Length: 267
Image (cartoon, rainbow, N blue to C red):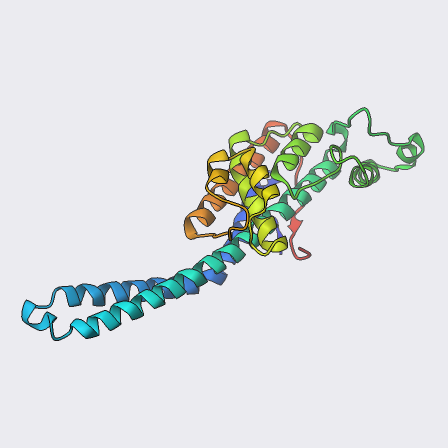
């Protein structure tokens, strides 16, 4: 999927994210619709039983108990499936966000290489610079250097929102809202748990979340299974939307060029 939605001469990063998120939503919308139909049907039937005249209630009491047990079983199963689906949707959503920010940085660097801030400890050989025939070649030299850095503080890492925030600020002067980054940190950590730790909280994850959201960290313990519900997914989506809209504004504020699309087909 390669998106080219322009804001003026530049591409809107948020539009790329919204298109990717829309594809996720289309996958899970059928289940959500079915879940709501089941929920509404059971609620309606249960209400109808409550509204029966007193004379009939005793006669249907056993049937009502059986129905209530069945309704609870169905609701529990539906909620369990719903949580599993939202967990997978969150993994895909965060994966797309990571891919978009990674490709965004690469494309911004390629198109604005002479505006890049390089730390003094990052050394690029004069031979490599002189061998660059144009800005595109120079950008490739810089990218190769940054991507091969062994120092964690300098290496390009987009799997952690706090490090990603530092990368955009350090190399391109792009500000990522601190409150949004702190809010999203727990979702980056939860994604890691779902993929790499069987959806089970470990101490490292809780400690990492505690740095930015101590209230959330306090509610969870080591060994507890991660639960992702609709409210969490919606909050994550809203925070990511705000972040990408802010990145659009920052690119415009700094007069950076960004005219290449992002291809998420390889991610």
